[in-house]
Image 1 (cartoon, one colour):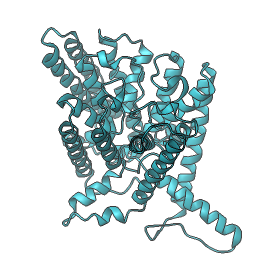
Image 2 (cartoon, rainbow, N blue to C red):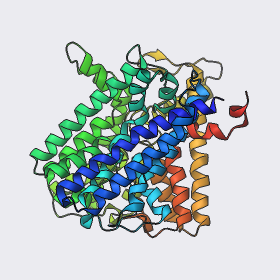
Image 3 (cartoon, one colour):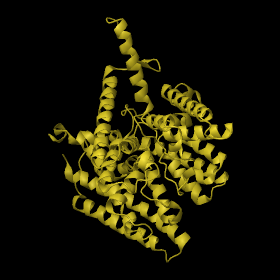
Image 4 (spheres, one colour):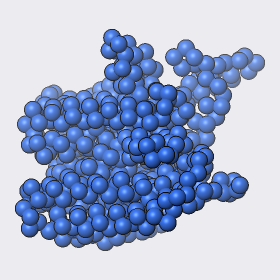
Length: 488
């Protein structure tokens, strides 16, 4: 294992991340003037982060070795752990909020992993610089800051394929949209940036201030769920803003490689969307959840009008199932079936290659096809049945990998939930908190429906680990705990 080379690369990546401390400092100067304390705190955080980067990079700057797959996994995990740690520095330094180490780390990791859970009770009173920093953390974490770094690393003489394979979400990681990995990363970020700008303009034209439009476009496109207000999207009380949020959550819940294929096609053919089986399943899930919630809200007469019932059902169904976690109402107070249904839908999440969390639609789709195949085998034991996706037969190795992922996902969920129960959290809160962290959803039920400030420090550390498992899709982190990984 080329440890010195790994440390050098992590140092460079942390150095790049230190630049994210500068925009909030400018925001502080613009809104609070030169005397704003938080602006100085962000500059101090920038200096500390840059110093950490230099300490990692300088002693190893001349060590250069080719990366293998093992090193790629280790770099990704080390980078997220390091980045989440240094990302907590502004929260620890801020004079506007008082956070202990567990809370500051929780907020930082929640932003970067696009989980969207928060320990802050009064967002409305925070300085603009802190609010902007939280939103920006989610935006960088959405597509994966590793992918951004991969676009830059070739210029520094570092191959990026191993990093991309470890970071890319979904079961099929070896396919590339363009011949070179740097071009792939740039293509993804170009699409990501385009969607972000379009979302920001839509929010702005719908009546948001420019600051709120930028901040909420960051958290919407990243499917993060952070807001600059306690009432989340409900603060704006606008059906147009609700609809814009839904549209861009669905766009970001789709595989970004699919968006790239459509944008780069000569005729801008939407047939590419129509022909994708995962996208069809994703849209079907959104329609089904919305229909069930709408019918339930109408049947229980939760709201006075059909329009309000449909608007709330549509928004919450899309927000929770895509793992964004935005709210327009206290949906946890709906009849118990519906909050649990929506929470369970977050296990499916978005499409592979999207910014959504969860297990991904493609895996659930293939698990369903595998279940159907097993039923057929019971009737015809000697027959050979192939699982096909888009009229292409899939090798059994892919199905085996997905079964392995599903079983490991369930095991990690159970272990994290038991650990939270051990800290004294009640059953509903521990179940929903584990689901919210592992699926990178954000809000839970019970004691963690609104915020996570009142949970114990031990619970927060456990949930940080669950966030990492969810963000790195279990295996990238879990493989580090296997003895064979460390053997030459």
